[in-house]
Length: 105
Figure 1 (cartoon, rainbow, N blue to C red):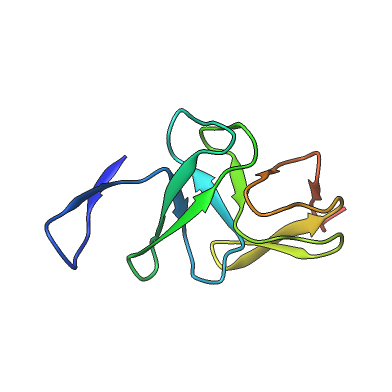
Figure 2: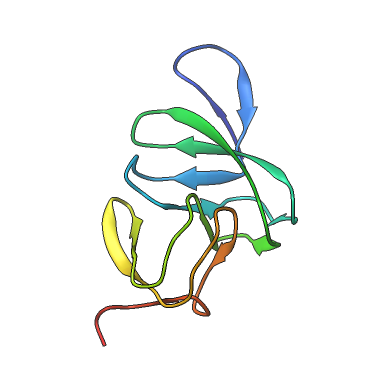
């Protein structure tokens, strides 16, 4: 995905979208991220960009940890609680059903 920042006319490639500054996960928006890939992340809420290096292969639409997460931590996406960590996750690792569960049941 490509977007234009409101701060300049420079076109930047985006690998990951973070919806809210409080989010501790981002969503992969390219076909796939490879292990040790340097990724550009766009924070939609405030039009900032940050960088992260992936630890795992992560496919389109899946989540990546933006920080280290410990068991029982809350996952924040869209600025909202979407589940809890059931197995520690390191920054850059894949966040999915193998390490996160809903709090609803």
